[in-house]
Length: 374
Image (cartoon, rainbow, N blue to C red):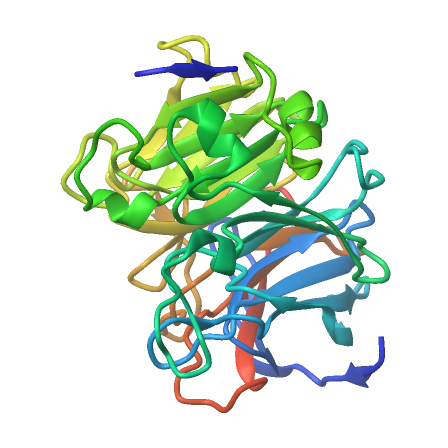
């Protein structure tokens, strides 16, 4: 591993979830598959610490990319039986191409613990006419911090070209795609960096995961240079398409999404999120083909969404597919989330980034249940 050290309410409506399929509830199988059609290019979902408050990222895809200023985060509720309700479809609004979010565990220079941190402004950002926005400042490439109750924007971390981040890191972020926060206040950001297709060299963004220590987070929120040693980088040539921090295991998990490289289509684990040890990375599963996202159950089982449209349990070689009674595929599965229901089952939330031809704000999030001992 090459390591560089350097100085993710106005409208209230109850939506009845139509049951689409029911399968036997046995280990490795999904049940109670349901569709929830109230979003606009849903890219990611995450639960707050209460396990009942759900946030869904709306990427606002147009014909040629994600339309600047139209992205948002929806506030939803999940009851103990797994029923969903939208409390506010645009809790956080006017975002540029949001793709993922997480919950901050510790306060920052501008926000309390429990705030949302949202990845925004990748190279897929366009204007209303579908023209690509080439300027990182115009895109706001980086992270947005928002109040989880009011939706107020509390701060921004600009991480693109000519940012305070780039001046210290030696290169900008180009395509922040997934974000995770740990209990110590570190923030991890996976950068796809144009899928690694651009020439590499000094000053060029590279695919991988950045670790921003709390001191770097606070400095960037003040638009100041991060202090020495507060930034670290883990290169991931196979593209880190989903990252999540397991508090229970004190470990960073990530999945890879591009074939043709070592550890492509793999689930990997980094204890303590420690970027300083070349040999610390553990391979949990491999040869799963291109992966889009992951979610970790309370017992530490990884569920990974594949780009071909199914969900696998990430263990060993090739994993084990989560089976449903009727064969179907998820449409462009996004960053998933899960929570425990009152009866012990786990509810898994799968955003489908592709609208499938539906109108705006009729795009779908699917849910299904798996046994609680998974």
